[in-house]
Image 1 (cartoon, rainbow, N blue to C red):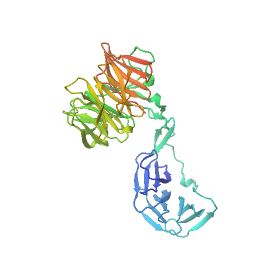
Image 2 (cartoon, rainbow, N blue to C red):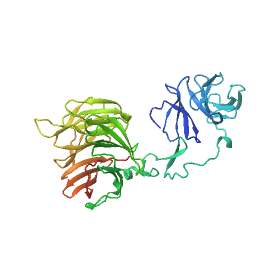
Image 3 (tube, one colour):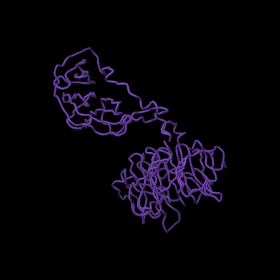
Image 4 (cartoon, helix red, strand yellow):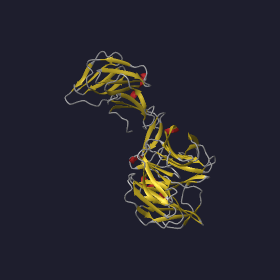
Length: 462
């Protein structure tokens, strides 16, 4: 876990329930609770605390204890945060660690260099057990009753790297930094091995790992892939994919909503409505940092945003958006970009950008002909797009500088995406649709022919 942590200090585990508890001693002291896999985090207690620097669990009574250095007190509460009891004790001065065993509360005093204990319910019968210069700090009581032997839910999980307990003691596979979890939910893969394309048609969603693309041009048919039928979804007009939630956001031609398909378990599908819209959505994009959903829709077109779950929809931009399409987001640069028609005075289109709150709108490139499939590359400050009329893939910095043509001579170019170190695009010819891939900045490329779909988009895992 990271972010929104206000000086975390003490940490205790409850493995039999798959839970962890910790204290925070910052500007808003509180006790927190979460699953041991980091999910389902919530505030356990946020009132009547100063610096809760030492925590201890008393599982036989289903209570959590804390010692507060600032208030000079010992407190306890049920593990749901109710039934709070506080004892103000003058000898609680600099508690560092604590543990409960039977009727006694043991704790270490950092400044007094001692280990003490007292009656946990009344605070009486305080006794100094150990006093030694420079010690102690951490404190544990070892007894079989405090650590009963039970079946390990991770033993049969088959995780390649980490298995973390969650609430209810179910094992969840997780990956260390630099690796990402494959679709089988057990294997961790390097990022370059786990990047994939999602090819979406009216009939199915097809996942193709880029590492499985052929290394020679002209291969017939798709490489090894997984396909998920779309039985209840019509012709799609826009999609985006959430790597974190393994969910596909989509809009249908003539539809009045944006929906979500959970693809976590291939072969099983769950669908739900995210947000109601007016008019056909022509493009949508998910802010993977905040979870906010952006889209272009309606006539005349406008750009909208909604909070996670489709709440509190807001119209961001509505003027001068003739022909608006191909919305792309860069949360790292706090920017969104889109294509608009150049106007009646001259042909072509413009690539425009704005802050993600709709302010600071400006054109970054006005000389495009038919730009499609906007995408951010690198650290999110360089914008790429495919130009169907010119048969090129081009890029420019967000400030409009350093324009360059990345690839050219791509006849029948239709869709494009970029990932970490690779380009992916599709071309259309009389023989059907081809999917092509190339390493960024090189002339190396692969092509898969004979693949026909009405709509193709791509997403990278990791």
